[in-house]
Image 1 (cartoon, helix red, strand yellow):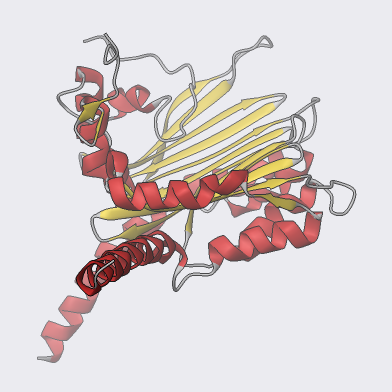
Image 2: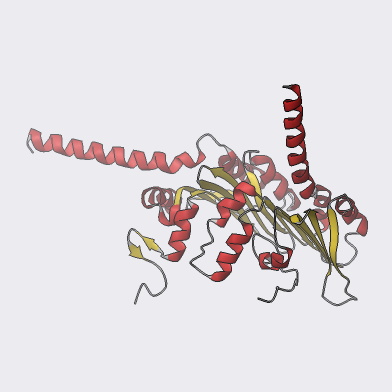
Length: 177
Length: 180
């Protein structure tokens, strides 16, 4: 291998690494400067002895894909799946309180749904971000919970509903025909 | 100069006070959550409402066009709904602080439906009006095992209130739609 080929290889590698790094930064900006997402995950893990399900890296890959493709006007998405929430450590009644205290006051509660009878809880918090809206969703069903944070462009999401396309490929009804 | 400042302060005060009066304080109902089988709590202020209304498209359907038009000038939508396993988990005294606010000047009770048993709720509709302009609406729907309080802040046509049922977290209150 000549010096020129080696140099080109290193440059390509550098560009690739920079690209991946940029994507990682884009994907993680969702939680930068705001600890609510991390605090909710941390507190639920700690209080209920839950474990994070890596989903074989789907969370990181999903975040990267969303940062790159921005489907349906969604950008900077992060999500964590928690398994094995042990109700004997903390009562179900405490769930709302734990979530509320972990979410910073800059987040406005949009919808709080509790159904202790069916052991289902959903908290949706919102934060206007210019013409975008940031959403933090914490949903729990029995012993599993998912925490999602995303930044959404309402105009692009509305356009996506009318004409669902990702990277120019239609994903709406009849797209497979 | 002093007169101008005083006038400005009076204008600001009169502009600000009705907005506060239209929005009901419903925090006292939060204590019912512990006894409830299901709780829905929706808080959408003006900024979020306008952002959320962007999801609605006038070109998608006439329904969405109408709802988008309806929420255009709204300042907020607030809903609290409790569903209980058995009767007697809440009492009229839990609703009294809300009713007390609705007895304040500006509010008028325009609809009162009392059901004798069955699954239909008792429904009371109140409006906050100033001259011919409706500036806020409150709906209290109660059943032995269900309590719903809806507060819509901002100018709204009361006949079109039923169009908001099922939107923005407002449950179906069995309000009749205005014939078109």
